[in-house]
Image (cartoon, rainbow, N blue to C red; front, side, top):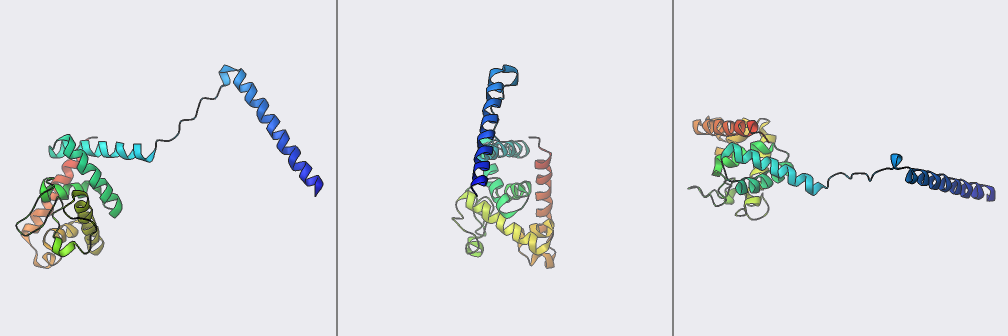
Length: 193
């Protein structure tokens, strides 16, 4: 047992000496100096860049001011990631629903940017539906649930717009709604970062 301990200590000492000699050689020779390693960008910096780029695309595609585009980019990217849906689809839906008006109110009582019906969805969605971030998150949750139920985005959009029973009725207005979201989705996808 004592031999094993001595061997471990000796190998540790040898390793320390080798490393010390190597560091001395490298430090003495400018041609072999090792520069500080660049650390990967923090998650916050990466997130801010994603928000900036997506905001620029929203600004170009929908002709909104940079501040509005940036706020909606952040809310949309966050909600889309949380509910695993395409952020471009969610942004297009919100644009069709409210043209990015945080105070939008429909004649039927739907509120906010994603035009959520509080009486129907307040028990499903968390937060304050009058808060635009919570409202968009709720819209994303609803859309994601419809995509899961339907298995197709167009079916989910019809359900989002006119309710699940609209599929059986074959609503023309729901079909026009899907076409509008698709049109704006295409504009956003074509917008260059």
